[in-house]
Amino acid sequence: MISRVAEHCFWLARYLERAENTARVLEVNHTLLLDFHVPVEQQWRPLLIISGVHDYKDEPTAENVQEFMTWDRDNPFSIASSLAWARENARIIREVISAEMWERLNYYHLWMQGDEGRALFDAHRSEFYAQVRRINQLIHGIADTTMSHGEAWEFFKLGTYLERTSQTARIMDVKYHTLLPRVEDVGSPIDNAHWVAILMSCSGYEPFHKKPRLMPSDPAAAVAEFLIFDEQFPRSVRRCLRECEAATAAVAGNPPGHAPTAPERRLATLLAYLDARMIPDVIRDGLHETLTHVVDSVHEIGEAIHATFFAADVRPPDSKAPIPPPAPAAMTQTQSQS
Image 1 (cartoon, rainbow, N blue to C red):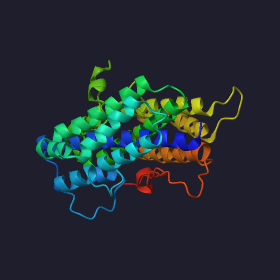
Image 2: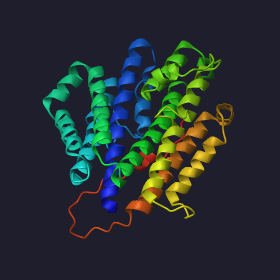
Image 3: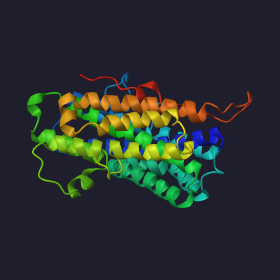
Image 4: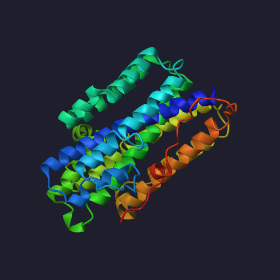
């Protein structure tokens, strides 16, 4: 498979996943603030930090942050920007993806760029974010049922689950670490509300409560264990890494006994790191430190994927094919919050 095509499949999936995660986090935060009093300085700035935006110049009010994270095309993490790059990647590889997938993605892009999307955003904010989530889920469903499950599909899966791993870890780390800085708040109603918000931000509220378990003595540890270690939940860190491992092995196509590629080695190392721990170990060593290690490792895995599978594609000097922008450093490198 041409590495340029593989790269576009990979980034198409990452940008779609990023748009959906941004919509989900904005919707959950909007709903949380309707039900609980949160200090002004802790209401919307954490959402910027989750996306790696540490130099936001305006006042982080509800409207400013939602406008910036939804519509600002100069913000590489906004819904509109992520969707535009997803569409551009899809346009370049239309011969690889299905016609149904392209039509729905293009329709989605036009809906966001037209009056209809903006009108819904202005009139019914929560419904707008829900619509963004639904359309993304529809595109993934169409891709699953209409794309040939060959190399292009495996790169699409790899991009989806790698982005999802990073987003789950970031939501757990930055959102909670920033919103609940005081030890005396642990176990309070607002503490529990934040953990519920984290579950909802990762689409894990229902799966968490439907999973048979004893009544947890520490709800925070139970949520952290679920979102990091659960083998069945499709957004847990471990499950996403397992999917990345399978997709990477499929595209590498190494015969038994052959040396694994650099991405395979890095994925195996990160999975071994998690497999050697249980939630008491994570809590003892520090949840923030564990999640920081996960996000930094995902960044290294992304670099290894680029070097192994994409960097070999040499474009002619006059090539007009746009190259999808790499994830900015702020998005891929975790910065400690205190």
